[in-house]
Length: 269
Ligand SMILES: NC(=O)c1ccc[n+]([C@@H]2O[C@H](COP(=O)([O-])OP(=O)(O)OC[C@H]3O[C@@H](n4cnc5c(N)ncnc54)[C@H](OP(=O)(O)O)[C@@H]3O)[C@@H](O)[C@H]2O)c1
Image 1 (cartoon, rainbow, N blue to C red):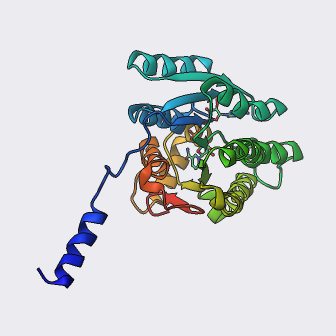
Image 2 (cartoon, rainbow, N blue to C red):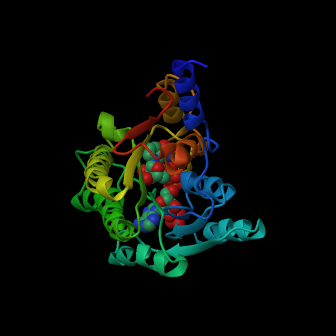
């Protein structure tokens, strides 16, 4: 065999697939905030299927949190529920409680979020502005800060923030403040990714479009809903699974060379 051919074969051997595309999540310690909502519940189930150990964070919906954790335990997995109002200061202890319970944190998914005060911006009051920013950008930042400090000392980890295309378009006239908060979340994503790279802490955001969840059901009437769906190039609302697939991809070994990215999952929006 000539030298050139031998070199090619060696390269092929060295580059052969050593794992499945989605892999590396078994026994990973994953904390998901807002795990009781439409996207969060789906994330919990997808990560549980991959064998991850889960922190199911909830605010009010204890029933859903317990249902999710019971189902995981029945299937032989590990999960625990953590209650916290991310508008209050006890959010600071959420990551700490998760670490104490499971001995570490590999992946933080900042998914809890929403719009407080879905009102025309001309009528928006200061408390809705402040609370929307607290929930969608301040709380994720301080949760990430806490996780980052641990990951830095323990060989790295991943932080995935759930953003919205409202950050790209500025939201509607009733969700301008939400767009602003999610834009802040994306900025933090990029800043933390740069700060985390030397420590193998990978930070990305998934920018979701219109996803069919309780959040959208609360916001829109039937007519508005159809008008909004007609604007989506793929002509359908997204499903929680559409977002969960991208999150799991980033969290898995397939995402090990991706950081500082804002990945849009919005049917072309
Ligand atoms: N649905 C969409 O079209 C869409 C589009 C773009 C981005 N997103 C983003 O995707 C994420 C998930 O949204 P979703 O559609 O799944 O919403 P959802 O069904 O309304 O779920 C919201 C989750 O956030 C939690 N939460 C709300 N207020 C909280 C607070 N003060 N403290 C702690 N947790 C709180 C809720 O907890 P409890 O239920 O336990 O009270 C729930 O688990 C959010 O960040 C949202 O901004 C959604």
